[in-house]
Image (cartoon, rainbow, N blue to C red; front, top):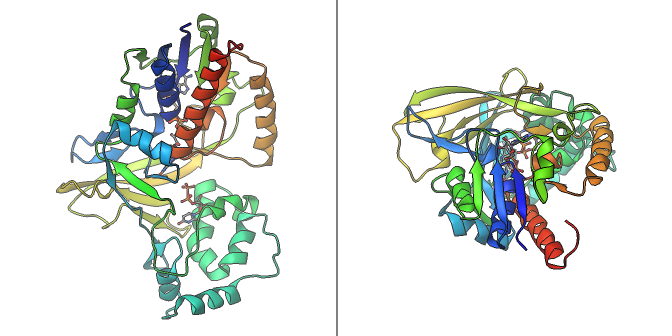
Length: 375
Ligand code: FAD
Ligand code: UDP
């Protein structure tokens, strides 16, 4: 029997779950408080330059999950795109993630891979056996000089605290390579949607069983009107923050335009703390197949998230994890609501993981319906 289902949030979580349920014949309502779909992956053309802008920060699609890759390619054309990040430090431009070019340039050498590996091992602090913090991880694997040039200041700006207070897992996201591969990611499939992410999400939401309502904020009382609710808003917000707020970092973007090419690449990081922003993104380089005379860039600043700000990065330190556990317990007691996505589960999730989890959530729900289990 067809169910009445509410999806809170029109980002990838809400759109993908909604699409799967709609295709199975259920009646799906999607609401989003914002005036646009695609959540934080929203892209739109800059009115002045015509450049496709990643409004909430740069988004590059990368995955090893073949099904997810085929899924997104069903709804739009992807163009090849490799994320090659640069960083400015000590008055020079280097390549990231740390690779053989970075190491040779930084230490003014011409080492081969094996020599560089030995050289870096000699820089590393091998007295740290089991690195727990970001700082220990950096000192153990790249040594103090590279840590201080590329990571210490950037991380202090990005997270608002000393790297010794952050978990090693944050740095483990970045590889160190002893070859000249400067691709930021490892994944088999990488690309950029030709017409932007919003067009992709528009395609996912385009189904006769889906009705979409923008500028519509979800209220908790609405749960009673539906057979089930999938909620991709903030977990603590669902409970009116009654146990306190889960901490986030937010970003401020300072837009400026330039006639021509401002920095010659999409992402330029700034490793030093004396520069107040973390990075500058030049958006036309995210669509290298397009030609634009003008250029639009964002200087990106990170700071603590206040209640009225857009939450970006969850701060998962000890206090936040304890509070999270309490909210997760409250959430578990609600049979008719499933908490999904980066805000609903208070995790940093890449787009491909978000889509994978959304597909699995929808399929689990459909199995329960099929087996006449309670939903
Ligand atoms: P969101 O996109 O946040 O969507 C949630 C939606 O719910 C929002 O539109 C919000 O308005 C709506 N909502 C919330 N509460 C309510 C309410 N009460 N009522 C109605 N609507 C509500 N991933 C990558 O794979 N590659 C990248 O390069 C990449 N770069 C990133 C850069 C930054 C700066 C950040 C922060 C993230 C990046 N990500 C990247 C991750 C990516 O943004 C997420 O995977 C994706 O946004 C998760 O989708 P979602 O639907 O779970 O959440
Ligand atoms: N980082 C850094 N310098 C850089 C790039 C990254 O110190 O130039 C650190 C920073 O703490 C960041 C982490 O490495 O949060 C992981 O990098 P990633 O590119 O995954 O950053 P994020 O997705 O957090 O922006």
